[in-house]
Length: 638
Image (cartoon, one colour):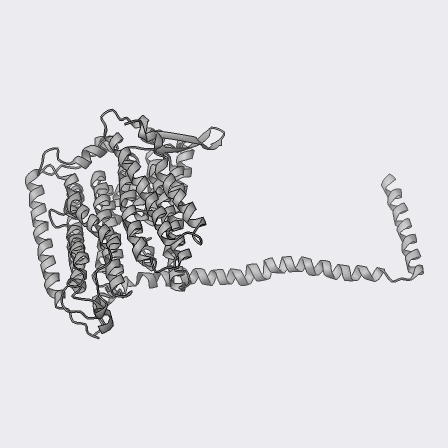
């Protein structure tokens, strides 16, 4: 095999070409051609990504081989920022996740979106390709600036896809909310980049990370905190998380792409890439860990009482991202990346499974109106069940291994983190099997017409479900802990060069095998008890008109966070902008601009009176002008 790294630019190029062809030809291309181009572009990138991973895994691969400089993007005085890619173990793993899961979502979309008009069908696939291109650019960037370009690209694409059905004003509001909240985080990222330039004089990863230990504690703490602000916005952490549940306004495959393969994993990737900076900033690590832990538990409490099938999964994503940040905060970088991978599989599976249910239920999303679907939808049912087992952390499914690694890392740093994390894991098991039982077991609670038309989804939908179900079931074996197999954690060995410097700085206590097994078994038993309880309780669910009360009502209304934000931020800002509009714009700006126009108009009206048509007046004015001229000359000479 030749040096495939030199062809890494093909990975983002294919979806960019797909975006251009489908975008420009959306009115003339058939749906079949659009589907082939859109899906084929991602498949081509996936094939190249596989070849890249194989080369990165080869024994002779070095970090310097993975740097691919295209051209100088910015050159100002001594600051040179190249348009460069960095291909290594971390970026190549993300390439596989993005293109692999992304391809399955594209295939799924060919059927799910088939009823759209041809023009909008083409627009959808163009946006989807652009989304994947932006995420690929983000993870392949060889410096913070190229990463930021991709970072902004996924923000733009999320806006376009969340508001895809733009005739619905609520969907437009959801898109604007996502865009604005992400801009808040992006401002923090941008400030961090400027701070790095001021202190290091470069944004290249290799240069910045090499200079990390020479930076002052204050500088490195500020830089990492600002980067974390960006990560919190993109990866939906408290307080910048409320955009993600509202992102459900977009088509279901878009939700799967945002939650599983792109967008929300960007913050995890950025911190994992900058791991040496965070390992040198213990204050920031504590902030990251606590924020992630609070987000994980807080979002899980909301998911307990949600009845929209997609909203349950959305708050689940916020919670799972919290666990990833907990892993990053306690220095379990491999565990966090491992959970990104397993989560990509089972969360894409769950969202696409939810889409299959919604498709069969004719756009119904309320699980209280479902039930008993396993008979009519056997493939969707069994694959969704596998996804629920994976996210709940039931062995030997993938979520068990990745979440356990994060919890073990948390226990080694602070047992309080661990116990709170376990509480969140139990809630995860409860709300996921509440969702499963109310959707697939018991009796059907929908309308007679819905029941009459229930059927399994077509192959283009069930095929991605089956592939993702297999991955969700077996992906955990890539990270077998040493308590099971010595040197069995293949992913840890693969990523070791990325986290080597941070590993030298880590001072956490390693758990002995007895403690690890005890924690693992006890949590698994608790999770199984929780699952059985939720299954029994909600498989007998009967639809009633009774309103929820007390804490359940609060959870159903999401702790009223959106209402608090509206009262404390949105309404005051709207009132202030209204005041500015009335005072600054209407009075000052309009007054100045209109005043100039009115003054000129008034002056011209007065000047025109000089044109009277009387010869005597003109001679008088001429004489006065001559006298004024001679007076001016006379006094000037003096």
